[in-house]
Image 1 (cartoon, rainbow, N blue to C red):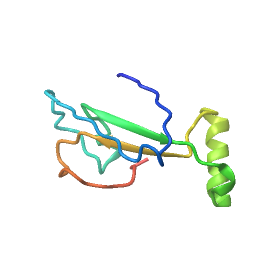
Image 2: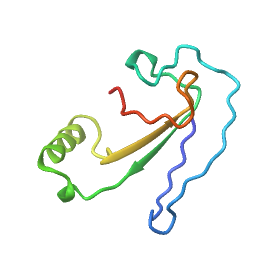
Image 3: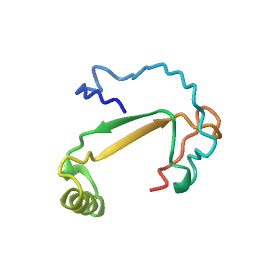
Image 4: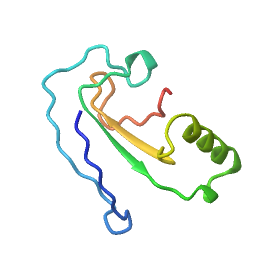
Length: 96
């Protein structure tokens, strides 16, 4: 995997653009099932968000997750994946 950390103000830079080429299609990848969570390419976009703006239940979940797993967990994440089954433009919540 490759990692590139970038802090950008979304008001100043509202668009993210990239190109990718995949030569190894994974036939078992399936964005709709936990068992299919395997992709030849994916991009995570993570967002900082003030905790006090989250609803109480979400705030508590995030605090618990940060305490158990990683204090740096972001408040929100988008994940773009190269899936061999779903049509381009498919939007779905994480199976996790």
